[in-house]
Length: 437
Figure 1 (cartoon, rainbow, N blue to C red):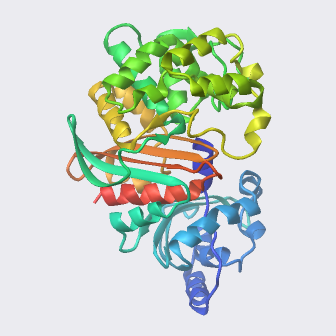
Figure 2 (cartoon, rainbow, N blue to C red):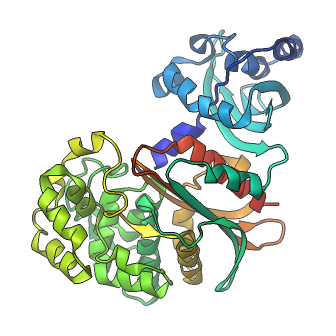
């Protein structure tokens, strides 16, 4: 999720030049004094393809984001927010880096821009940190979520102790596949065991269980010693699956299941036994087709028996990665599940731990980019999850204006096709902006 989310927020490209756009860019160019201001003034022309991608960005940026990726990512923004109109405001303290307010037909984007050295002063960094939609409302966002292919739901709620005060919602009690968002329950149990004195954040343990798609610990030697806090940080910030599976075995699968039930999950059986990531990946693959069919058909006891009996086979070397090159796989039957209301209750339980360390782990990657979206929030923590056909995003925030706590959570499933990450990011960012008001 993290990699896709960063890619979705790293740039914006739009099409459809008009005379008014050209006039705005020309006027700004005439008064631009610094390299930063000159490049900021070219944004509309860049987005309308009057300035070439290769002429605007330096080689470092072009290596990280290709021109095709740049256009593909931002085409979704054009569909959602309309054409670019003008540069409203440019702010820089050193003439090399700063922010640009770029107006579109349906709102204003805050763009963090950085210009490299050299005579050509090409752009080395461009990232959308916020988007304020004009005349937006929860009703408008809900209508767009309702039109997504497959099924989707969301909940924006103020939380006060154990009380949930819904602000806006759709399908808040529907169970969705949530991908790595299930890791909230692991963090909750870890914080509970630390509070009970069973574990310490500084405790050193071996990286004992390797898994697929482990961004933080890829290719690390098995049993490398790491602290429990490091495992939690990797699990939450980059959704590292080896860190996740190590924590599941360290804390105990059944203890996490009990924590999930205690937190108020409305359909806990759907996540029992509480699968490790490598077990889920292996069972989804074609080389475990028979075991998968038995697992899906079984009750909790039968499923646990199957997992235990195949513990030495459901491991990373046996994960059939080729199987994941097609479309969504078994997202309605072999996944981790929760409703928006369940996720709010999980956030309530986590916050009740009173663990600054757990909350800090959630805040490493706040899910919505830079300072723009986070600015109205004194605290903003996040966990998301995704795979083909699944995306889920959940945020816990304390509003600066009145110190009230809110949860913004949304999930989208489509068993027939991949879901559009950039679309979901835009919708959740808008829900967060509305909750901040």
